[in-house]
Image (tube, rainbow, N blue to C red; front, top):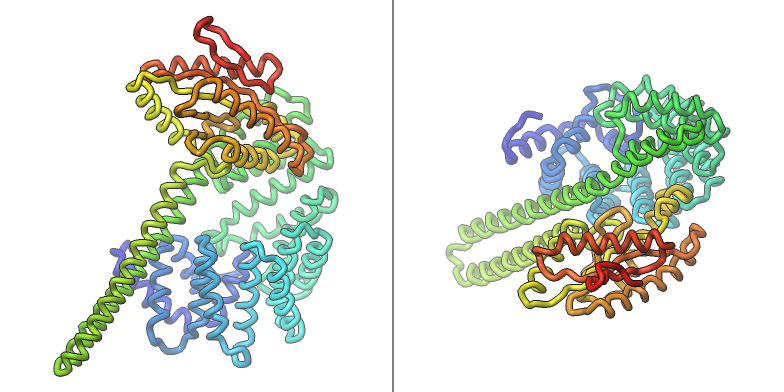
Length: 568
């Protein structure tokens, strides 16, 4: 799309999409419902252009479709536009708006006259419910679609319903039920010519087998899934073929590793890494972790350690990128909402002008109408301001907060520490500060996986919020390292609070679902007396922490300035 100014781009988008809707009709539904690597579409497919427009200019695309809802245009179904908007909002993470539009589409579609569109809408409803953790309701709607599609021999919709039900069962950990649905879908897709290739379903079946650690069963399906690589060039701007190829190679490498074929696993992973430019950050981290395990299995412990360290560094970088992605999504939603409110205000002002011209001779009625309209505009502006303030607050919270523990992030924690050190120095007081580090955290990740490690960090953050004062400042400053600031408290009080927290953490560890056992923490506590001495004093507190680690862990060491040593 040419780089027009915003308004011109929206007009161009609107002029282009009207004939697309009229010409393609339910193809919109087919593409959005089955936007999978199995799509076989020509590069000039009109639907693909619309989806590309969203990926390139999400704000303009959504605004253009929103305006179309208010226009009276020939040869298109409002439910079609509402479906497409619902799909885009779901991609942006605004599930509430997506569901509202989906319900409007279901109200507008005529069930008797448009049964295919009606059941496609129901299928998306089940997919939206799965994303919002309403799997039981999702299963109900997908069952309705499956029964109708089977009775009316709508093969592609039936296959899509089977795939959706299989994925819902997989999210519920019902792997046997998931495999049953997916294998049936695979058989039907193999027997019929549809846009859904059997090789795509084979990849989904393989993922269920790998979750169940049945790697021998996964291998043949992964081999079949590789065949789809040649079919992706036509739609590579929507789902790059190289990315899918890399996913399958990584899955094969994992299966070979778990079946003891370490050399083959390493070779296969190396092939995946030759196209690493198409891999997502999460996939690159998982690849590095898998490579470290393979190297360890081959006895290359030095290379395994270096690879694992590289994965850890990439994971820290990924956490920062996730925060940035959340900021971008919120900003996009905020901009769309702001533009919608501005359009509504402009339309209201236009209607007010028309009303004034038509009612020139009826001034009394005009005054009443003008006052009502003015009140409506004030309400709209108040609502806009409240929404703007709410989005701004969300943006500020994300900028200050660690997404995993809900504690302050490193940057904001050290900013508050500098402020508190300034206050302490100006008042001639001492500021109690503690550094805590979760014991043996690396072993949790190695032995139980990163999901267990994330659960430990979330539990740690929740306990910190429950066990320290609201006036205490707590933040995550590293992978498993935390900084605590105790305004208006001495060392004795700070030490007592951290010991109480240490006991609570041990108990909480026993309740975690990974059989981790008691969780322990080591730490150092000392005073910060001002900004000029803060760096040296933090270094002493850090040394106290490592003293606790070296003397058996599960201890809080206090910095003793009178002896330049430490006390327990």
